[in-house]
Image (cartoon, rainbow, N blue to C red; front, top):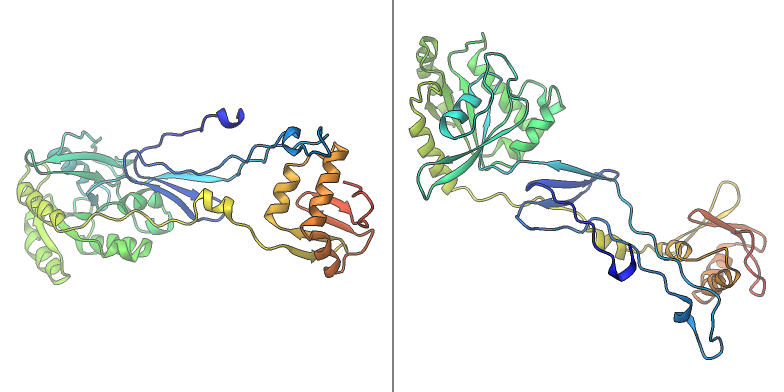
Amino acid sequence: MSGAHGADLSIRVPLGTVIIDEDSGELVADLTADGCRAVLVKGGRGGKGNARFATPSNRTPEFAEKGEPGLERNLLLELRLLADVGLVGLPNAGKSTLLGAISSARPKIAPYPFTTLEPQLGVVELNREKAFVVADIPGLVEGASRGVGMGHDFLRHISRTRLLVHILDAAAVDGGKPHEDFLAIRKELALYSEELAQRPTIVALNKIDLPQGSDNVSSLSDWLHEQGFEVFPISAITREGISTLLQRVTATLDKTTALPPLTFSATATEILASDEELQVTREPDASWRISARRLTRLIDMTNFESLASVRRFQRIMRRSGIDDALRQAGVKVGDTVRIADMEFTFADHEEPVSNY
């Protein structure tokens, strides 16, 4: 507000925030770099005062413009975490335990499904030069790609990670079948995004400290190798095999390029600059409708309580050829014409526009 002296309204958001036009579903901005900004909604042009319309023959005009309304949009802000590695797997596979073992993160851990209700981040520091961010993605379930449970809430965070580490419960402590468990997660990833399913993936066979887990390592490793995956037996509890896993994760990240920002549609500035052609159409009630952004802007900035402003509006309609376009379309004197939310009765050139 306050014209040229008005300050911009800036809203600070976390890195990884995606901004979506809720009405069209189009992606507007993807804020992935520290300090980046996006102009989402622009204010309208300020109206000109009556002095701006003074001429030698009319030194004190009796009309002025109203300010143009600003752009209005319904926007959805969605956070997608930025991480190098995403830990995926069924509930109770041991993801949170592993995150606590390799970083200073302290996620809640308990022996029941869905202990983790939101993604947890941890920084893994191998040495002063090697470090990466790991996201513990809450346990996925069958149907997650359709939104079952908190499926979409979880899957959108995985889409940001460069490398997936699939934690598989080799011991099948909860009565599951490791082969089927693995395939179930892979299926949900592919259903959500085929590109995500093709993301580099390493499989960690967890809970080899348990007898059943140790017994299953050989057969599971052979089967996963046949599927084309690298396999690393580990125990998140005893930390056995974790060092080897982290070395392989680091080597894979070194060969994996950073994900590009999401591509997005027209910016707010481009939307304001767009202008469709003048269109005159017949309405079901026999009235006429004019469609053109420049006319909508003119109406918004005209004070129709002032007769001088109304006459100026009429002159613009005539000089810009809009009156002629209406006649060519078949509009006759006395017909009702609508522009946006305003309607008027079409009149001869010499008659004032009436019935606003």
